[in-house]
Image (cartoon, rainbow, N blue to C red):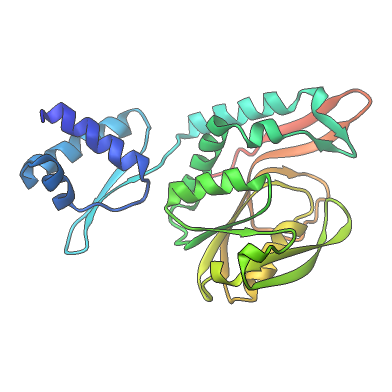
Length: 269
């Protein structure tokens, strides 16, 4: 293969498996090339991606060293994404009543989900998490893509336990959005006690669901090292959790005028 072809293939392989480490020998064997040639290819690939803010290729030396692709979104592109989301969410036809908005078309849009997940991947890249946790259902696409970006397994909390989950642990928690006690469960096989996790969710009003996830994982001595939500309501001001990262803030939703106050979090990083 010509050098340009090898560089293109290397970028393709690394970018499709973010945060997965490959040895130089893997590419030497794949292309039948010397280590010196592969090293030059990797340097070219690294410079190419970084020049257009499409990600970072990181190499580590030593016996356990290798090369991996780290997803990245620039501050400017993050701002553009936030502006696009705000514009979509300001559509008055989204109002469902009770201050709730229809967001399924956004949370299940694969292109938007990928961009949002890249923001969370950049934010939590160095948090040393071992799992990504979420609760069904609309938070699952964002959490799944974030887990893919960070090369981590997922833990999904269920509203109701299922026989296919095997042995489960369940708790009751107070949902701030519906003002009532709800239930969530997690499969014991999905959790490794003593590990670290980040929580990813689509929307947070009072933080009841996120606190519920934190509490149920706390039963396994798991540490929550970060929390990311796509949209956080400004009310109530005092939430059940304080340390979280959000892309957007949702203010007043006026059902009469169809006006929706939504704005970007300018201090996300």
